Image 1 (cartoon, rainbow, N blue to C red):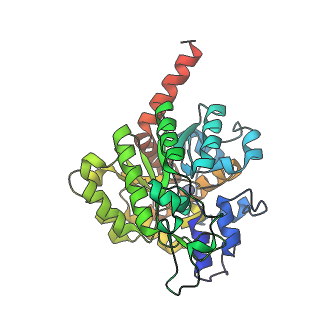
Image 2: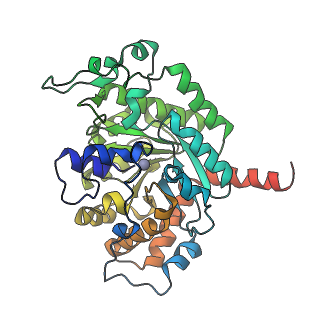
Image 3: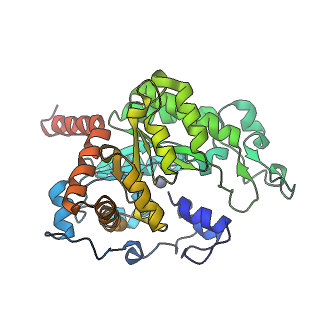
Length: 371
Ligand SMILES: [Zn+2]
């Protein structure tokens, strides 16, 4: 999800971002509120002159089975209705962000059963809407942090902020995952920068931590890969993973649109008791590409076998261009041919989502044979 836009708007930096105000940027999560906010596909591309390839880009995606490790195409129902037949990307891991979004993810995976890996979770931007206990469901102030200057308080937004009680969303999340054995857990995580639109309130940090731990434990229990969002919370996330240990951590953990430091990459990969070997780092052009030098630095620092590519796009139209752009960056950063970047990251995708793909294809084989 488009955290870069949210962050730049908070910093008052409107120079780079086409979606330059918080209300508009945040609307990527609220497409029903603001519909005219899609970024032109051409804006995604930065094609370094040093990168050359002997085959066309569409051929490249198709030939290597390049897949999208993290995206939200369900936010563009018209684009999805047109079908995915023109997409060159092989598989798409489609992230659900909240109770109201999960139905669209489930429907898209039913419509595109050979292509979509459905993922279900609560994004931190919506953490305050999903109560973990009944007491919090009755008292939104437990789910929202007020600004230190006292200029806002949850009591000023009683209707807008009414949270969903746990019995409405937690059993639903579990049943979606068990009903769809090929599903993964995501998108969830930590975001210190998020502000609830129309307020000066933030999803409570303590609640974000509890929600993240819940998702990690659920993914661990069900043996599913997990896709995490993290903004200004990498230290807390490392501590949590260390504390949960191998028993409480999912089998594979992806940090999507990774924006942490190079030192933190080493810290994650060296987490003790084998947890470090479960961590993958995923990059998008749309988020990471806006700070290009930092992107290249991170792409060089991540072990090649832990590197994933994603579009993080909110429309199927952005998936192929987004994947092409980030592959070009991988090739440039690592000094390798783009074909090698495509082959390596695709291999990593198959490793990361391997159990999901096996189950998806087994189901389709059973359907085809009439079982
Ligand atoms: Zn996302």
